[in-house]
Image (cartoon, rainbow, N blue to C red; front, top):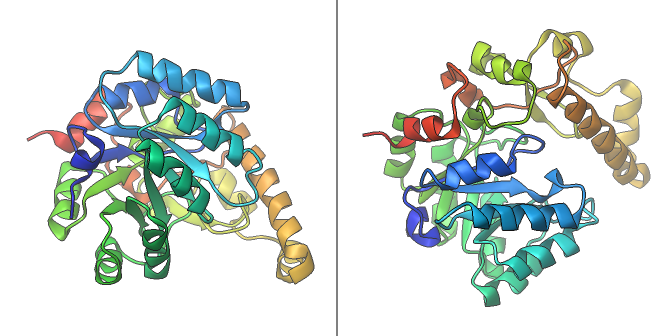
Length: 314
């Protein structure tokens, strides 16, 4: 399969993964100038103007390619149409689609030469996006941060590669150079790495969030349904232990009602994301910090350049 660095014309086959509320402009610039690609969630910007200003700022401060935007493409993202228009107009290098049908994104990006990578956790979705014309799939395994998959990276690679001819990018569980090498030896075209970049100097999150990624490890990662209504990985802080990780009985009953399910999930998602946003920028013990098991290998807060070097050093 074609290597990610050749697909995007970058030095190393790594994407700094998009992280809600964490990834910022400075992080993207530093990552790209270190030889890897980098992606930022469009939802990290409150307005389309802010998104466009960021794309232009990144372009003015980087010399390589590899600029990506992550788009949520389901109905919950009411801004997706305008976000996509801005990405196409300003010519980003690639888009990562999540949580929905990427058909419109692919149709608009193809003529402009913008690559489209689609998050998948099952082979049936890999086949669907291949039919739609995607350029690669991002195989989200069970060790990913956030909304993880159900299979190991090797299991996921085997089942997708048997049913799909697209390049496969691994997402989840890598925090060392050895981990990068192992994934490439399996046959992955590249890697999408997120959690190891949370504890970076450039991130505009609380120092306690960063330090938690240093102090806690893979055994401290738990799934909670309180953030978005679906299982999401977070650090098992005292606050998380106190509040629990599952919806209460009222939330469960409402979520099972077919007529109310959509609205309940939207409300739960909104409430949860606002809570996560407050935790990301506060310095209290009431913390709900999203991260994956790969923080096991985070030993100190470092600049992006040094973190990248950990993955590419010979």
